[in-house]
Length: 249
Image (cartoon, rainbow, N blue to C red; front, side, top):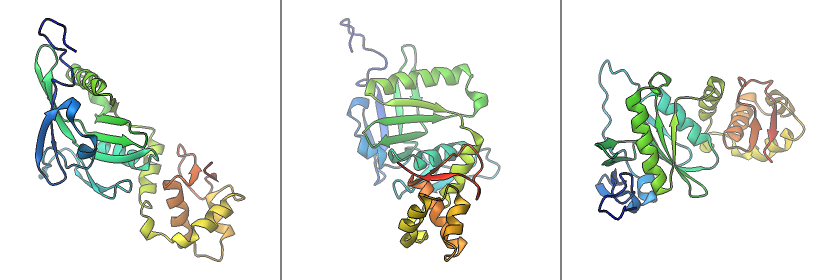
């Protein structure tokens, strides 16, 4: 809000400018408070990705089950956060490098492209910056994060800085992502697997109870149902046939 003296809050959502790229590739500029969430969520990365020999970061594209669209990432750490977002049952949209923020922090003009833009089922928006743990205490990084957090707060968005999660959880989600595609598993077994899971407390137990079906058919179904949240297990321990499992409440 204005101070009444002609000066405006440096993080006022009306004074911060946003550039984003629509799904058709067109660049659009608007005040932060005028940015349509749906266009950003379904848009393309605001900056181009470059691949070159010897680059330090591992870049690529990930096909998100949540949206059915490709999501770009610039590092394995970013990919890990995207996987976790894709696994989360409450996330409905995922966009990478969604926009560039431009605005004053009171002493200088800042420009910043956050890493991820997540929309949740309840309409909440989370803006995510991913940074390696070794950089999280860098004063310049902290200042950038603080400004971005204030800007997002003014728009009513949650701001998250992420440098990783429990390694076992990340690796389990990465493994389960290999079974995220419903069209590649035997959907006709869903009801039977869920029925058996009521009485069988482990992955191996479910497979044994369905011994009339090949394990290579049953296991992908079990793992897809874990990915989709219909079956639940403790992801803090490595997944195996002995992993305890249950039907989601």
